Image (cartoon, rainbow, N blue to C red; front, side, top):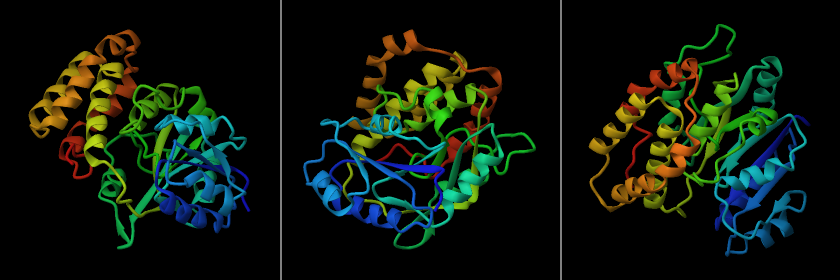
Length: 297
């Protein structure tokens, strides 16, 4: 048993996938506390969790909060670390302890992102080589490749660092929502790392709206650029996306939503320190060539 980490899961209308994930989490040797935020499911999710996993803390806000459902759960966390996973992913035995060991050892480390194995094939997720080969230059003490962001389905965070950075943005809702939070944690002096000894399994749910996720992901990328990056970098990223995303209704909607949010984005704009911008700049070419970060669907 390991009492250092609480697992937080958000879910919406994926009862069967969530129950499988909770079965896997219940079998972990670390025996972590688990908090589930049910984002207004209508498929009996809450009732099934209460009946089959009474040890789980179940939050039912009554509406779909998106990623902010994690913020709600973190308010209930009393452990120094919080592990996020999706309702269709789960941690491999021993991985939570391994991530907690790293966070114990390195106080300036805010996040540990693990290796993702896609089930049922058992193959690495396409994002893994990008994490492993991250071009960001980190300090010599860092116990793995430095990252510019983290994946909420596969990361363990320092609870205090999460709270200090304000958690996930209500405006971004869901879809690439990690980038803004990760950058704000970095601006607070923290580092994010990939650790190959930490593993998460992901069995992608067929219950998903890929087009809506693409709309939100593209919109949120644009918002992030103009919220935190210097104007030249934000313009370059915006123009690159305008040239390369599919010319379809989803992309048009994403750009329209991004433009509609410009007044609040400019009000809340806070450019990151130069050392954090240097990390983001190092990711420019890898992001352009990424097989995993495509705004299609």
